[in-house]
Image (cartoon, rainbow, N blue to C red; front, side, top):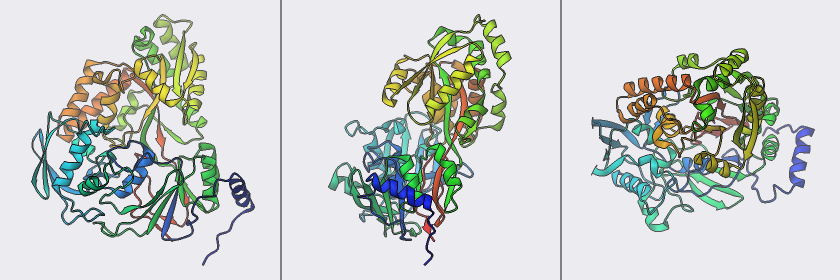
Length: 510
């Protein structure tokens, strides 16, 4: 057996961690080639895809359950999973043909009745699913036969196949719900792994599901260790106590890049980060003011402040999202402080003005806010920073208390409609549309993308809406997020998807 070389630096890191008492309860199985250990930043909310809506829970449930379809991240096409295909006999009807010979990990047959049960449970107001809105367009669900389900929508809804790739539409065992109730502690799916143990606040252990319909996972066990501190997770990775982790503080990423025993990657993702305005404020109703602010922004400075771990972009729809056209970058505004000052003067603000930039005190937002504050000061706009805890920030911006604000959107389905409709369509003012932005031209284009089942028509509408929103400075796109992931070199086939998800069934250690 090869003995891993441990440097003095790593011994010191391990000693610090041990002295902090953070490894007392954590199982130490990272050296077992049949076991993969992940360093999670927090515990799950629960293990039901219907009742949870957080990234940490999804990381676990995505290994236990399957969706009907998945997205091919290379081609952006919708591919089979539990469903083999779909057809549209008309704009309101989706006939979905299911994969045969699939069972849940409790032995329950997977069939059209299970799909109907899952989706009706997701929609049931008594269940109060946090993402019931995913299927709000559904009118009825009919079982045609064991392997065929017909879903009728209230109106044409083009992104429907993409919705069926979303983790919250994963299919659950009706038998398990009847036995256990909400599945928050007793998950039962058709996925490659199943729950063995959950010690709240400490770890979750999954084991191979021997009834899995696909190729058997090479791993026998996955352990999700809960380690809240990013620096501690990095130390545990470097000393071999965990096999992989993400959400790595950017200053520590360079350290991992230099570690010969670690592979650290940062591929481009779907999440966008942007600056926007409260369009209820008179000053921001002036296009020249918004253009001036867009021209004052130097994205290179922002990327530098983030240690290069971001991809500067002038497009609202990013490269990893359906609806992106590279020519959209040309509709954005280049950094030009002199022209920005002239535009402010033309708008009636030759000496600038004072405003407030709101942001949540989490992630990279505080750093980005400081860079923007400095950049806008150079064209005469005095920016007061207002950082709030995340929950307060989200509540206040929904009510319209803000002037300018920083925010982002992950876009789990990677469909541009999921980005534009919630955030920039007038239907959602006072909801996710925190800019209170309303434009009848882009509303119509978004609705074409939303209510047309012809994917080519949808693509053209999204491209046109994106160009119009960029030109009108509904948002100032700043950068697309890079999805940081680091793992030991003996881990293979570990890939983070653009929407920040990862599936572990094909991972192995060697």
